[in-house]
Image 1 (cartoon, one colour):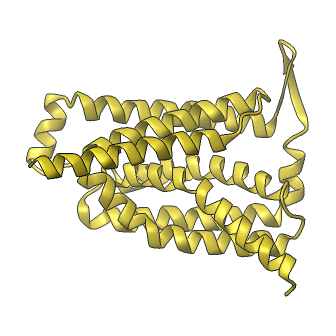
Image 2: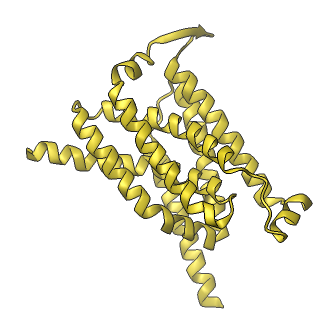
Length: 235
């Protein structure tokens, strides 16, 4: 394997891992609604499902590329299959995250009763379906991004598998960190809403660099982490 090929694999793996952070956060928030003994299973199954989807999409990459061809023109905007998927995924992500955020900030009496009695009405199958929907949207967006960077299907497959292994390893620490500090969970909710906005904007062919979003969220997380350390010192 040449140095150029290794460099492409490493670069694409890191990019896939960064793009997969929003996937980890969304899967973690959904799995957190399940009983404790099912949370790890749902989280790992969600990430594994993401791997299967991305590798499957690589096998039908020609079909995925055709999804970029216009299907409908409305108000001077041309929408392709990819655009409709991004639009629907963005709306779903914003709605789901906003709903969870409202419940987090203003828990109802019914939800409080469920928490006190350790009862959940959310079925495992329902959570897996929601994870599948958002995994499909993220997978298509990620694969199309990878196609723009490298030409080798083998490199893409290695990067997807490598980043997925790292996602499995880092998912539990990320979840524990978010659950330990509620303020970080609020930032995670806002991050997912912004990702949904980005998906909708991208559906209208408005190009925005996601690097700005990731950098701004990194600054927010660093600032909040310093606040957490400061509060610990005061105590």
